[in-house]
Length: 453
Image (cartoon, rainbow, N blue to C red; front, side, top):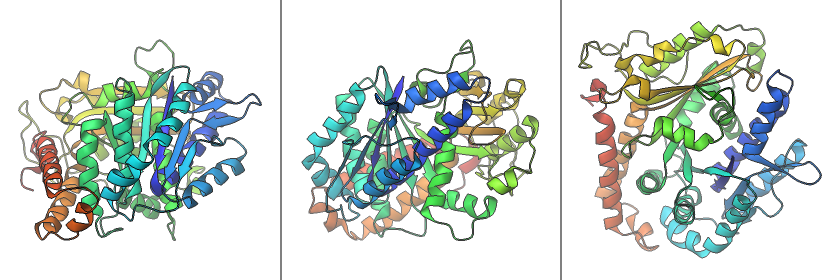
């Protein structure tokens, strides 16, 4: 089954291009392994279609209100020599959304609805079987957030029975755009009603990974996007689910949503990957599954996205009531977790530590809360690698901070008139705040770790 990706705005198009590059390179390199033929075929079917000349064409639609980034993404894909975008699979204009969610959602989205829907329809009809749609976007600007939200709404209307996963890039906390918190509030509140799951990468977190683990001195957006693409590829590439009888998963988005987003109040997913290091250091390093999984489990427990500086003092609450004394910054309670292991000796890896009931909300049995996928094919030149996708309290603080900052601005009505003139009322803001406050409350009730925030 195939996934159609919709890349929206500058960030969505840049991350999407990096993701397809990682996936294609990994699929072609993976063919050399014992399982490589089936792995490569499953990956290509999932993300690419072949032309009559054997070229790999990404199952993707590129949308932006300015042409520069789309032109760059299309050119970079063609220069790779491995894959390319469809010749008529992109749409752009010559005027952006001005970092205004309302301009993107109320103006640009409706004005260009028909052409975008037609591009998506063509890609969907080119699939033998559609697994779902993945929309990639930022929440900070105008086109990615505003047009992205509008396009997601249209996708939900056009494909009501298909899975929709939104991948969101969270802005730097120091501020990329003065109204980024408004845009983020409006985006998340709307997507929560439309999407089956929302997978989030925080720019601040990825930036620290580039600096501390990859030892990159002058960090560019390309470096940040490369880390995001690597982590996404670790989740989305083919793997064998428990009980699948040796066959690769046929429905990647459906399986992901079923494993992690079992309740409509909880849709926010975060990703942790191990190991994370420069390619120069990687070739001189050796890893064992017990060591990798021990570190990854503690990263989940203390809500750390890096294996460096893990707080080993944080422990799950003791006792059946999930209460007990905690040390460190607080225990990160999960609703559900999906562990994806790739590489040598993967079927001998012991994952029982992730079945500990203390890791999860008390009302969901740990056997239902934890899932694992495995692939013996090394991923992206990593002999062994582990990726954990969790539906947990990991995004509680960033979401609470973002809503608080947006509310402080809204209380003084700062910049609100810029949204009102494009059709977003003050009542729309209030409805969005109410929706997100409910989400914050729901995640806060998963466990005791955040009671004193």
